[in-house]
Length: 262
Image (cartoon, rainbow, N blue to C red; front, side):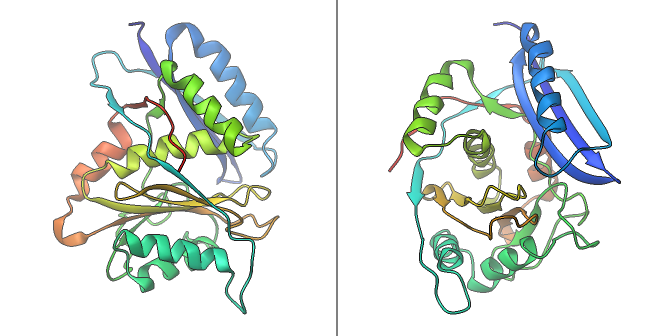
């Protein structure tokens, strides 16, 4: 197998996160992938960045974990109730299936859609939340928990492309989110994940768990809303912070296998 590299992009403006992405590719594809990530940073709907950093890190000698993608549940909730949008109720219901308390679930949605960082904006990483109490546990509430070093295996490209066509996904949001969610669901101590994109025009969110899979939820926020982020839920009583962060940041993961849509 050719030597693999983790190629990462982060774009910022005024010290605030604008966009980011990561790929795991053979050495021969670094230049093309770096150029693609640069174009993505320069044309992102969150605005033109003032700073773009692209790094390539060799994964030679590192264990690379291969995981199957979570099963995909395509949920549509076009109706609205009085006050609370129905799609938020769907997210709360799905999180409850994974064992997340109502308080923790609703609190996470509220924080994400009002700016979860101490400064009131979007975080660079994800919140880490106790599944029962809703208490935030991440050591740094500005940076949050970063999930890195994950991509689709080369042989799985056809499978994820078929899924994108079936779901009518015209952007890379779905493939990137499903890969990250599949890694996060297998983290030590993980219970569930909630994600709402910070891209203003991408309103689909998801709830994911190893208990039931990856549930796409249409319209998790208003079109044009610039708030977004992730929340990872754990149970503090059987959770090791160091092991969790080590896995999320440093364990290279390739997602491989058919994408099953329920």
